[in-house]
Image (cartoon, rainbow, N blue to C red; front, side):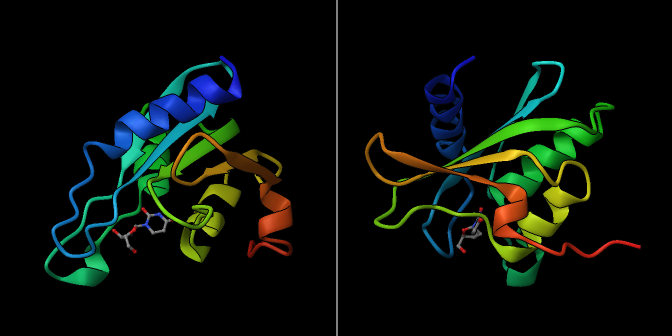
Length: 126
Ligand code: THU
């Protein structure tokens, strides 16, 4: 699967976002080393701190299916700015694959690409 195809899955996943509070839909598509792909969207809650981001939804789906090694994640939001992952999601993904690639889109079809280690150097671990 190429980058654009992965991003298109992320965009599709954003259509399922549950966002009654922020009205900001995000979708993610996480590609594992074995080629399998898990998608996710953000799911908000009236207790705002209980909200889960799209990236962590996808990651939890993958890990709960036995996958722990990731190659790429595509993140899509119909936004003005590049939708880069929040700090919590960077740390969460780095637990499993600190060198994975992170594709960040914004409205339209453009995206930028980073290494996770570039977005979160000196990740916490012990
Ligand atoms: N959000 C994500 O899903 N991913 C991110 O990396 C940043 C933020 C969600 C959380 C919340 O539902 C909405 O975007 C606004 O913060």
